[in-house]
Image: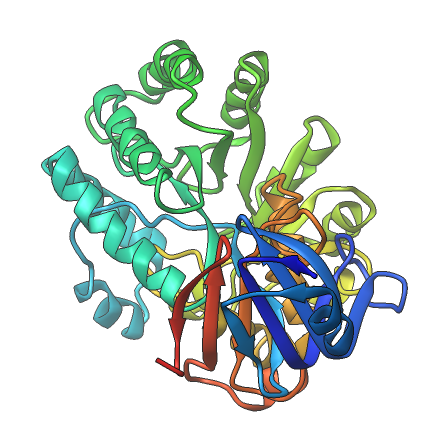
Length: 408
Protein backbone atom coordinates (compact mmCIF):
# COMPACT_ATOMS: atom_id res chain seq x y z
CA UNK A 1 0.00 0.00 0.00
CA UNK A 2 1.16 3.53 -0.77
CA UNK A 3 1.53 5.90 2.15
CA UNK A 4 0.03 9.36 1.70
CA UNK A 5 -0.38 12.44 3.87
CA UNK A 6 -4.18 12.39 4.09
CA UNK A 7 -7.07 10.17 3.08
CA UNK A 8 -10.66 11.35 2.83
CA UNK A 9 -13.06 8.42 2.87
CA UNK A 10 -16.82 7.82 2.99
CA UNK A 11 -17.68 10.88 0.91
CA UNK A 12 -21.44 10.80 0.38
CA UNK A 13 -21.30 12.83 -2.82
CA UNK A 14 -18.20 14.23 -4.52
CA UNK A 15 -19.05 16.98 -7.03
CA UNK A 16 -16.64 18.75 -9.35
CA UNK A 17 -16.17 19.79 -12.96
CA UNK A 18 -13.64 18.64 -15.55
CA UNK A 19 -13.56 21.86 -17.57
CA UNK A 20 -15.05 25.37 -17.58
CA UNK A 21 -18.82 25.09 -17.81
CA UNK A 22 -21.25 26.69 -20.20
CA UNK A 23 -23.98 24.08 -19.75
CA UNK A 24 -23.97 21.30 -17.16
CA UNK A 25 -23.89 17.82 -18.70
CA UNK A 26 -22.55 14.34 -17.94
CA UNK A 27 -19.41 14.94 -20.00
CA UNK A 28 -18.16 17.90 -17.96
CA UNK A 29 -19.64 17.21 -14.53
CA UNK A 30 -18.65 14.52 -12.03
CA UNK A 31 -21.03 13.39 -9.28
CA UNK A 32 -19.39 10.43 -7.55
CA UNK A 33 -21.09 8.76 -4.60
CA UNK A 34 -19.31 6.85 -1.83
CA UNK A 35 -16.02 8.43 -2.90
CA UNK A 36 -12.53 8.87 -1.51
CA UNK A 37 -9.50 11.10 -2.14
CA UNK A 38 -5.78 10.54 -1.50
CA UNK A 39 -3.61 13.62 -0.83
CA UNK A 40 0.18 13.91 -0.83
CA UNK A 41 2.44 16.97 -0.73
CA UNK A 42 -0.54 19.30 -0.99
CA UNK A 43 -1.72 17.69 -4.22
CA UNK A 44 -4.46 15.24 -5.09
CA UNK A 45 -2.85 11.86 -5.75
CA UNK A 46 -5.94 9.84 -6.59
CA UNK A 47 -9.75 10.01 -6.66
CA UNK A 48 -12.19 7.12 -6.76
CA UNK A 49 -14.63 5.01 -4.84
CA UNK A 50 -14.00 5.01 -1.10
CA UNK A 51 -13.27 1.26 -0.97
CA UNK A 52 -10.74 1.60 -3.79
CA UNK A 53 -8.94 4.48 -2.06
CA UNK A 54 -8.86 2.59 1.26
CA UNK A 55 -7.46 -0.53 -0.42
CA UNK A 56 -4.72 1.30 -2.32
CA UNK A 57 -3.48 3.89 0.20
CA UNK A 58 -2.72 4.20 3.88
CA UNK A 59 -2.25 7.27 6.04
CA UNK A 60 -1.92 8.33 9.65
CA UNK A 61 -4.38 11.13 8.87
CA UNK A 62 -7.73 9.69 7.78
CA UNK A 63 -10.73 12.00 7.49
CA UNK A 64 -14.10 10.28 7.60
CA UNK A 65 -16.47 12.48 5.60
CA UNK A 66 -19.42 10.60 7.11
CA UNK A 67 -21.45 10.64 3.88
CA UNK A 68 -21.23 14.41 3.48
CA UNK A 69 -20.90 16.46 0.30
CA UNK A 70 -17.35 17.30 -0.85
CA UNK A 71 -16.47 19.94 -3.47
CA UNK A 72 -13.45 21.97 -4.55
CA UNK A 73 -12.60 25.09 -2.57
CA UNK A 74 -14.32 28.27 -3.73
CA UNK A 75 -12.65 30.85 -5.98
CA UNK A 76 -13.40 34.58 -5.70
CA UNK A 77 -12.55 36.18 -9.03
CA UNK A 78 -13.29 39.83 -8.24
CA UNK A 79 -12.50 41.82 -5.08
CA UNK A 80 -11.41 45.30 -4.00
CA UNK A 81 -10.27 43.89 -0.67
CA UNK A 82 -7.35 46.26 0.00
CA UNK A 83 -8.37 49.64 1.43
CA UNK A 84 -8.61 51.53 4.69
CA UNK A 85 -11.66 53.07 6.30
CA UNK A 86 -15.36 52.33 5.97
CA UNK A 87 -18.36 54.02 4.39
CA UNK A 88 -21.34 52.94 6.45
CA UNK A 89 -22.75 56.49 6.24
CA UNK A 90 -23.38 55.96 2.52
CA UNK A 91 -25.83 53.15 3.21
CA UNK A 92 -28.28 55.69 4.60
CA UNK A 93 -27.83 57.85 1.49
CA UNK A 94 -28.45 54.94 -0.85
CA UNK A 95 -31.51 53.89 1.15
CA UNK A 96 -32.90 57.42 0.78
CA UNK A 97 -32.60 57.16 -3.00
CA UNK A 98 -29.34 59.00 -3.68
CA UNK A 99 -27.59 57.50 -6.71
CA UNK A 100 -24.00 56.24 -6.34
CA UNK A 101 -22.84 58.59 -9.10
CA UNK A 102 -24.14 61.48 -6.99
CA UNK A 103 -22.22 60.18 -3.98
CA UNK A 104 -19.07 60.18 -6.12
CA UNK A 105 -19.67 63.74 -7.32
CA UNK A 106 -20.01 64.94 -3.72
CA UNK A 107 -16.58 63.56 -2.80
CA UNK A 108 -17.78 60.33 -1.24
CA UNK A 109 -17.51 56.80 -2.47
CA UNK A 110 -14.13 55.89 -3.89
CA UNK A 111 -12.68 59.35 -3.14
CA UNK A 112 -13.31 58.99 0.58
CA UNK A 113 -11.60 55.59 0.61
CA UNK A 114 -8.64 56.88 -1.43
CA UNK A 115 -8.00 59.67 1.04
CA UNK A 116 -7.95 57.24 3.97
CA UNK A 117 -5.91 54.57 2.17
CA UNK A 118 -3.21 56.99 1.03
CA UNK A 119 -2.53 57.92 4.66
CA UNK A 120 -2.13 54.30 5.76
CA UNK A 121 1.27 52.68 6.16
CA UNK A 122 2.42 49.56 4.34
CA UNK A 123 2.48 47.62 7.61
CA UNK A 124 -1.03 48.68 8.59
CA UNK A 125 -2.43 47.74 5.18
CA UNK A 126 -0.77 44.32 5.37
CA UNK A 127 -2.51 43.73 8.69
CA UNK A 128 -5.79 45.05 7.30
CA UNK A 129 -5.74 42.87 4.17
CA UNK A 130 -4.65 39.78 6.07
CA UNK A 131 -7.75 40.01 8.24
CA UNK A 132 -9.92 39.97 5.13
CA UNK A 133 -8.00 37.14 3.45
CA UNK A 134 -8.05 35.08 6.64
CA UNK A 135 -11.81 35.50 6.95
CA UNK A 136 -12.32 34.64 3.28
CA UNK A 137 -10.26 31.47 3.64
CA UNK A 138 -12.12 30.46 6.80
CA UNK A 139 -15.37 30.72 4.84
CA UNK A 140 -14.08 28.48 2.04
CA UNK A 141 -12.42 30.82 -0.46
CA UNK A 142 -9.13 29.10 -1.25
CA UNK A 143 -8.16 31.38 -4.17
CA UNK A 144 -8.93 35.09 -4.36
CA UNK A 145 -8.28 38.01 -6.70
CA UNK A 146 -7.40 41.39 -5.14
CA UNK A 147 -7.22 44.68 -7.06
CA UNK A 148 -5.36 47.88 -6.40
CA UNK A 149 -7.25 51.06 -7.21
CA UNK A 150 -7.53 53.04 -3.97
CA UNK A 151 -4.16 54.78 -4.37
CA UNK A 152 -4.76 56.73 -7.59
CA UNK A 153 -1.15 57.88 -7.83
CA UNK A 154 2.09 56.10 -8.62
CA UNK A 155 3.44 55.79 -5.09
CA UNK A 156 0.23 54.54 -3.50
CA UNK A 157 -0.78 52.14 -6.28
CA UNK A 158 2.68 50.54 -6.02
CA UNK A 159 2.25 50.42 -2.23
CA UNK A 160 -1.04 48.55 -2.57
CA UNK A 161 0.38 46.05 -5.04
CA UNK A 162 3.37 45.48 -2.77
CA UNK A 163 1.00 44.64 0.10
CA UNK A 164 -0.88 42.13 -2.04
CA UNK A 165 2.34 40.49 -3.19
CA UNK A 166 3.69 40.20 0.35
CA UNK A 167 0.57 38.27 1.36
CA UNK A 168 0.84 36.01 -1.70
CA UNK A 169 3.40 34.05 0.31
CA UNK A 170 0.66 32.91 2.70
CA UNK A 171 -2.57 33.11 0.68
CA UNK A 172 -3.40 32.20 -2.91
CA UNK A 173 -3.93 35.76 -4.11
CA UNK A 174 -4.08 36.95 -7.72
CA UNK A 175 -3.00 40.64 -7.88
CA UNK A 176 -4.63 43.00 -10.38
CA UNK A 177 -3.66 46.56 -11.27
CA UNK A 178 -6.89 48.54 -11.54
CA UNK A 179 -7.52 51.77 -13.41
CA UNK A 180 -10.36 52.63 -11.08
CA UNK A 181 -11.30 56.29 -11.36
CA UNK A 182 -9.56 59.63 -11.91
CA UNK A 183 -8.08 61.37 -8.85
CA UNK A 184 -9.41 64.79 -7.95
CA UNK A 185 -6.02 66.49 -7.93
CA UNK A 186 -4.90 65.81 -11.52
CA UNK A 187 -6.30 65.98 -15.02
CA UNK A 188 -7.52 62.88 -16.80
CA UNK A 189 -4.74 63.22 -19.35
CA UNK A 190 -1.98 63.42 -16.73
CA UNK A 191 -3.38 60.44 -14.80
CA UNK A 192 -3.52 58.26 -17.91
CA UNK A 193 0.02 59.39 -18.78
CA UNK A 194 1.20 58.33 -15.30
CA UNK A 195 -0.65 55.02 -15.53
CA UNK A 196 0.81 54.17 -18.93
CA UNK A 197 4.35 55.52 -18.56
CA UNK A 198 5.03 54.85 -14.87
CA UNK A 199 2.67 52.28 -13.41
CA UNK A 200 2.57 49.78 -16.27
CA UNK A 201 6.36 49.49 -16.77
CA UNK A 202 7.13 49.37 -13.04
CA UNK A 203 4.40 46.88 -12.18
CA UNK A 204 5.66 44.72 -15.05
CA UNK A 205 9.28 45.12 -13.92
CA UNK A 206 8.55 43.89 -10.40
CA UNK A 207 5.96 41.34 -11.56
CA UNK A 208 3.47 42.88 -9.16
CA UNK A 209 0.31 42.00 -11.12
CA UNK A 210 -0.96 39.44 -13.59
CA UNK A 211 -3.91 41.49 -14.82
CA UNK A 212 -4.77 45.05 -15.73
CA UNK A 213 -8.41 45.94 -15.11
CA UNK A 214 -10.24 49.10 -16.19
CA UNK A 215 -13.45 50.46 -14.67
CA UNK A 216 -15.10 51.46 -17.95
CA UNK A 217 -18.30 53.33 -17.16
CA UNK A 218 -19.96 56.70 -16.88
CA UNK A 219 -17.94 58.82 -14.45
CA UNK A 220 -14.89 56.58 -14.76
CA UNK A 221 -12.92 55.64 -17.91
CA UNK A 222 -14.59 56.11 -21.27
CA UNK A 223 -14.11 53.90 -24.32
CA UNK A 224 -11.13 55.73 -25.80
CA UNK A 225 -9.33 55.96 -22.45
CA UNK A 226 -9.93 52.26 -21.83
CA UNK A 227 -8.62 51.37 -25.29
CA UNK A 228 -5.46 53.37 -24.69
CA UNK A 229 -4.74 51.61 -21.39
CA UNK A 230 -5.49 48.18 -22.84
CA UNK A 231 -3.19 48.74 -25.84
CA UNK A 232 -0.29 49.72 -23.61
CA UNK A 233 -0.98 46.97 -21.06
CA UNK A 234 -0.75 44.32 -23.77
CA UNK A 235 2.70 45.62 -24.76
CA UNK A 236 3.95 44.73 -21.27
CA UNK A 237 2.40 41.27 -21.33
CA UNK A 238 -0.49 41.92 -18.95
CA UNK A 239 -3.75 40.04 -19.31
CA UNK A 240 -6.91 42.12 -19.43
CA UNK A 241 -10.05 42.37 -17.31
CA UNK A 242 -12.85 44.92 -17.35
CA UNK A 243 -15.55 46.40 -15.16
CA UNK A 244 -18.14 46.60 -17.93
CA UNK A 245 -21.57 48.22 -18.11
CA UNK A 246 -22.21 48.40 -14.37
CA UNK A 247 -23.69 51.86 -13.79
CA UNK A 248 -24.66 52.79 -17.34
CA UNK A 249 -24.13 51.38 -20.80
CA UNK A 250 -21.60 53.47 -22.76
CA UNK A 251 -20.41 50.67 -25.03
CA UNK A 252 -17.70 49.15 -22.82
CA UNK A 253 -18.50 45.47 -23.34
CA UNK A 254 -18.21 46.00 -27.12
CA UNK A 255 -14.45 46.26 -26.63
CA UNK A 256 -14.39 42.46 -26.48
CA UNK A 257 -14.46 42.69 -30.28
CA UNK A 258 -11.14 44.57 -30.20
CA UNK A 259 -9.19 43.18 -27.23
CA UNK A 260 -8.50 39.76 -25.65
CA UNK A 261 -10.38 40.55 -22.44
CA UNK A 262 -10.32 37.57 -20.10
CA UNK A 263 -13.27 38.61 -17.97
CA UNK A 264 -16.00 41.23 -18.32
CA UNK A 265 -17.49 41.81 -14.89
CA UNK A 266 -20.75 43.35 -13.64
CA UNK A 267 -22.78 43.58 -16.90
CA UNK A 268 -25.86 45.00 -15.14
CA UNK A 269 -26.52 47.46 -17.98
CA UNK A 270 -25.36 45.34 -20.92
CA UNK A 271 -27.80 45.08 -23.84
CA UNK A 272 -28.87 41.61 -25.01
CA UNK A 273 -26.76 41.68 -28.17
CA UNK A 274 -23.61 42.32 -26.13
CA UNK A 275 -24.41 39.52 -23.72
CA UNK A 276 -24.90 37.22 -26.69
CA UNK A 277 -21.50 38.33 -28.00
CA UNK A 278 -19.88 37.49 -24.66
CA UNK A 279 -21.67 34.14 -24.57
CA UNK A 280 -20.20 33.19 -27.95
CA UNK A 281 -16.68 34.16 -26.86
CA UNK A 282 -14.16 32.51 -24.54
CA UNK A 283 -14.31 35.43 -22.11
CA UNK A 284 -15.72 34.99 -18.63
CA UNK A 285 -18.94 36.79 -17.75
CA UNK A 286 -18.26 37.81 -14.14
CA UNK A 287 -21.43 38.26 -12.11
CA UNK A 288 -21.40 39.87 -8.66
CA UNK A 289 -24.80 39.42 -6.98
CA UNK A 290 -23.84 40.86 -3.59
CA UNK A 291 -22.69 44.06 -5.28
CA UNK A 292 -25.96 44.24 -7.23
CA UNK A 293 -27.95 44.17 -4.01
CA UNK A 294 -25.64 46.68 -2.31
CA UNK A 295 -26.26 49.25 -5.04
CA UNK A 296 -29.98 49.28 -4.06
CA UNK A 297 -31.07 50.14 -7.59
CA UNK A 298 -32.66 46.84 -8.71
CA UNK A 299 -30.29 46.47 -11.67
CA UNK A 300 -29.12 42.99 -12.55
CA UNK A 301 -27.79 41.37 -15.72
CA UNK A 302 -30.16 39.69 -18.13
CA UNK A 303 -28.87 36.25 -17.29
CA UNK A 304 -31.21 34.54 -19.76
CA UNK A 305 -28.76 35.61 -22.49
CA UNK A 306 -25.83 34.05 -20.61
CA UNK A 307 -27.11 30.92 -18.89
CA UNK A 308 -26.20 27.65 -20.66
CA UNK A 309 -24.22 29.70 -23.20
CA UNK A 310 -21.53 31.79 -21.52
CA UNK A 311 -18.68 30.91 -19.15
CA UNK A 312 -20.25 32.56 -16.11
CA UNK A 313 -18.10 33.18 -13.05
CA UNK A 314 -19.00 34.52 -9.62
CA UNK A 315 -17.24 36.84 -7.19
CA UNK A 316 -17.96 38.82 -4.04
CA UNK A 317 -16.87 42.26 -5.30
CA UNK A 318 -15.78 42.88 -1.70
CA UNK A 319 -15.24 46.64 -1.38
CA UNK A 320 -16.01 49.58 0.91
CA UNK A 321 -19.35 49.83 -0.91
CA UNK A 322 -20.18 46.16 -0.26
CA UNK A 323 -17.87 44.62 2.37
CA UNK A 324 -19.16 41.06 2.05
CA UNK A 325 -16.36 38.48 1.74
CA UNK A 326 -18.23 35.15 1.84
CA UNK A 327 -18.40 33.17 -1.40
CA UNK A 328 -20.93 30.95 0.39
CA UNK A 329 -23.24 33.96 0.46
CA UNK A 330 -22.53 34.63 -3.22
CA UNK A 331 -23.54 31.04 -3.97
CA UNK A 332 -26.79 31.58 -2.09
CA UNK A 333 -27.55 34.88 -3.80
CA UNK A 334 -26.82 33.48 -7.24
CA UNK A 335 -29.46 30.83 -6.62
CA UNK A 336 -32.18 33.00 -5.10
CA UNK A 337 -31.50 36.28 -6.91
CA UNK A 338 -30.12 35.17 -10.30
CA UNK A 339 -32.02 31.85 -10.34
CA UNK A 340 -29.08 29.52 -10.94
CA UNK A 341 -29.39 25.86 -9.97
CA UNK A 342 -27.15 24.83 -7.04
CA UNK A 343 -24.88 22.76 -9.29
CA UNK A 344 -24.55 25.71 -11.69
CA UNK A 345 -23.73 28.07 -8.84
CA UNK A 346 -21.03 25.67 -7.68
CA UNK A 347 -19.51 25.47 -11.17
CA UNK A 348 -19.56 29.24 -11.56
CA UNK A 349 -17.80 29.76 -8.21
CA UNK A 350 -15.16 27.04 -8.61
CA UNK A 351 -13.87 25.99 -12.03
CA UNK A 352 -15.33 28.94 -13.93
CA UNK A 353 -13.97 31.51 -11.49
CA UNK A 354 -10.59 29.80 -11.70
CA UNK A 355 -10.84 29.97 -15.49
CA UNK A 356 -11.61 33.68 -15.21
CA UNK A 357 -8.26 34.09 -13.44
CA UNK A 358 -6.35 31.92 -15.93
CA UNK A 359 -5.88 29.09 -13.42
CA UNK A 360 -6.22 25.37 -14.14
CA UNK A 361 -4.97 23.65 -10.98
CA UNK A 362 -7.60 25.04 -8.59
CA UNK A 363 -11.39 25.12 -8.64
CA UNK A 364 -11.56 21.46 -9.59
CA UNK A 365 -10.56 18.01 -8.30
CA UNK A 366 -8.01 16.20 -10.43
CA UNK A 367 -4.87 14.12 -10.03
CA UNK A 368 -1.96 16.54 -9.70
CA UNK A 369 -4.23 19.46 -8.86
CA UNK A 370 -3.99 21.36 -5.62
CA UNK A 371 -5.83 19.79 -2.72
CA UNK A 372 -8.26 22.60 -1.87
CA UNK A 373 -11.39 20.87 -0.64
CA UNK A 374 -14.54 21.56 1.34
CA UNK A 375 -16.38 18.90 3.30
CA UNK A 376 -19.83 20.42 3.74
CA UNK A 377 -22.23 19.73 6.58
CA UNK A 378 -24.64 18.71 3.82
CA UNK A 379 -25.58 15.44 2.15
CA UNK A 380 -25.74 16.40 -1.52
CA UNK A 381 -25.34 19.22 -4.03
CA UNK A 382 -29.01 20.27 -3.96
CA UNK A 383 -28.79 20.93 -0.24
CA UNK A 384 -26.16 23.59 -1.02
CA UNK A 385 -28.97 25.88 -2.11
CA UNK A 386 -31.72 24.44 0.05
CA UNK A 387 -29.91 25.27 3.31
CA UNK A 388 -28.62 28.80 3.03
CA UNK A 389 -27.65 31.97 4.84
CA UNK A 390 -25.11 30.45 7.23
CA UNK A 391 -21.66 28.84 7.26
CA UNK A 392 -22.11 25.22 6.18
CA UNK A 393 -18.47 24.08 6.15
CA UNK A 394 -17.64 21.04 8.22
CA UNK A 395 -13.96 20.68 7.24
CA UNK A 396 -11.79 22.94 5.07
CA UNK A 397 -8.60 21.67 3.43
CA UNK A 398 -6.20 24.18 1.82
CA UNK A 399 -3.08 23.00 -0.02
CA UNK A 400 -3.58 19.60 1.58
CA UNK A 401 -3.71 20.94 5.15
CA UNK A 402 -6.75 21.02 7.42
CA UNK A 403 -7.54 24.68 8.09
CA UNK A 404 -10.63 24.09 10.20
CA UNK A 405 -12.89 21.22 11.18
CA UNK A 406 -15.93 20.76 13.37
CA UNK A 407 -14.42 17.54 14.65
CA UNK A 408 -11.71 19.37 16.60
